[in-house]
Image 1 (cartoon, helix red, strand yellow):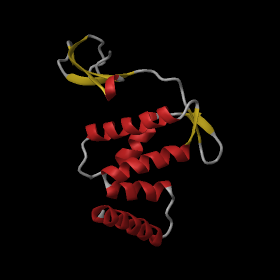
Image 2: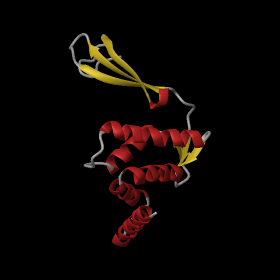
Image 3: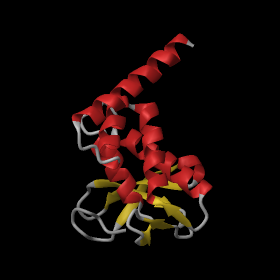
Image 4: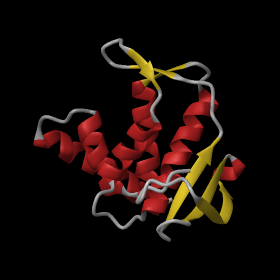
Length: 157
């Protein structure tokens, strides 16, 4: 593994932990050249899933897009980067469990929204506004009213 700071490939592993229900390994490393520490993650390589976009194009599944979308929605919200990674792991796991070779991008978006709805309502509305392409203020208001109504109904039950 090359050090991200000095680019040498002489390091030692300081700590190893499993994560993501045993499907990933997190390693803390120290560069023997510059002495700086960094973290690496190893994951099981899955069979590739293809994503069908709204316009019919097909592209390879890219976990980075899920992480980026979730992180963007949660920007300046009280969730740590570790919690964002865990949320992304949950979304990815659900997509891989429910789909064999190909998945619609709309299913990925709906899955992300469902998870965000449970974690942070503000992030949910942010993501929904981009994903559903809100063009009117009334669409925001309708979504917030629906969210507030669901919260009220959940509290009275």
